[in-house]
Image (cartoon, rainbow, N blue to C red; front, side, top):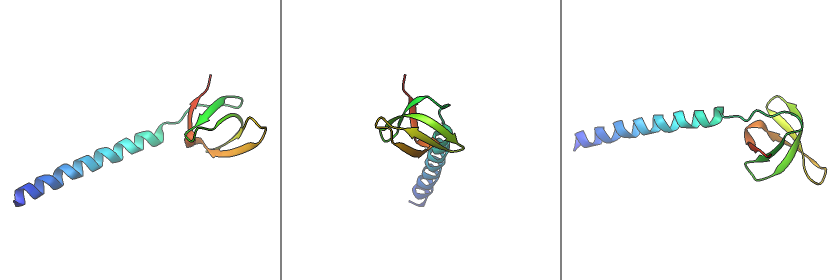
Length: 79
């Protein structure tokens, strides 16, 4: 019984380590963007990049309003 418990802990620790490593890979994934690119965010908002300030991006929406978002929230470029 104790042996089964230790095996369970070893497997759980291994899976937690893999989940942690995968989350780091996801965080490192950034889209290379520049001013004028049309993008979609993870929330489904479409916009055009008007300014890049380090880790924040200012996008211009369809109704000419602007929104400040994190660079990590960019899902993909729209062609």
